[in-house]
Amino acid sequence: MNILITGGAGFIGSHVVRRFLKFYPNYNIINFDKLTYAGNLSNLKDVEDNPKYTFFKGDICSLDDVTNAFKIHNITHVIHLAAESHVDRSIEGPLEFAMTNVVGTLNLLSVAKSFWNEGEHVFHHVSTDEVYGSLGEEGLFMETTPYDPRSPYSASKASSDHFVSAFYHTYGFPIKMSNCSNNYGSHHFPEKLIPLMIGNIVNMKPLPVYGKGDNIRDWLWVEDHASAIDAIFHKGKIGESYNVGGLNEWRNIDLVNFLCDLLDKKLNRESGTSASLITYVKDRAGHDQRYAIDASKISAELGWKPSIKFEEGLEKTVDWYLNNQDWVDEVTSGAYQDYYKKMYS
Ligand code: NAD
Ligand code: TYD
Image (cartoon, rainbow, N blue to C red; front, top):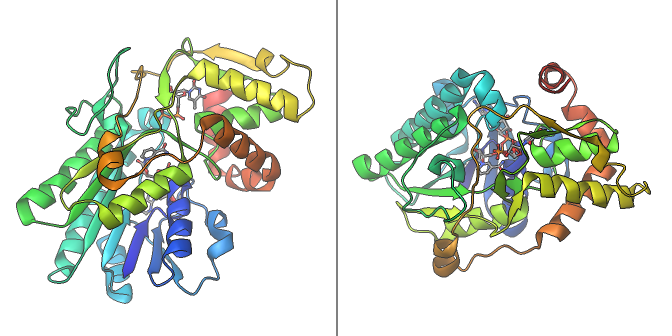
């Protein structure tokens, strides 16, 4: 099996690459990534000498890049994670999200379709629960929940999901799809809530909480997302989509306070020191109130469930960031700094 993993140098992609190399030593893994600000080969330093691993620098929007990757590596399977992934950036500049997430996905589908005439193939499209919109106090997102994207990011992901489904229904193309809730863990780019807060607490910088801090997210350990992708890729049904989530809803402000308390202890600070940095800032435009996933389909059909409690995963995550300040410095140098200054200073 020659698997093209797109976006393998990003947060979730790097965990998927690592997991597949570890558990499936016969597979050839080709990490196809453009290395945007969010993609860093240092995320995969520990596997770069593995003979079953190859890095291919390319853009999913480029017909030549994708065609060359398929030709050179005789790609038989795809796990598609490459995307622009940050909601705040999509509000600042939606066009890039349409290009990468919609046009890039369509380009990838089209090239795969042109190569895959016979034999066993799978195109696993990795998507988000944000395509379903925003929940009130009650209810959970199910696979049957109508799409109602509300940010440019979720609109672009919803559109890519529709193209993936369209390829299945129109051409019988062998797709599988997953829609997952918010991930957390190591190698998470420090523009997203959890790593941003950890870094700011460590450096005694303000902790920007949007609005009232009462928005709710359903957090999942990134390695549990990788294990869900593994289960769907190997055992999921062609043409089906699966919701993946942690059954783990937290209000943003409670999560930030939890991190403050944890880091006060780890950094031997007086209790309440970090929480005094909390700063309520202007709310995100169109901020979705609540996301929460009903993961009963993947659990009943594929036997998947989260492996780790949130408090335990958060502590591991905090420890990883405390021990990997070099990584943070490396990935936040250059272009990211300009964006960060614009957003948070
Ligand atoms: P990320 O931003 O950390 O990584 C994205 C990767 O895609 C980077 O390595 C980047 O270089 C690469 N990339 C971007 N544009 C590209 C292009 N044109 N061609 C090739 N590579 C390109 O994202 P992530 O958080 O790891 O998310 C991965 C996928 O999972 C995305 O599709 C995202 O929508 C989805 N997802 C993310 C979450 C989450 O909580 N982070 C939750 C559910 C679903
Ligand atoms: P984020 O990590 O950007 O993920 P998403 O928007 O995809 O859910 O944000 C998680 C939540 O945290 C979301 O409700 C917005 C909020 N948030 C803040 O309050 N402050 C911040 O600095 C960031 C980045 C996010």
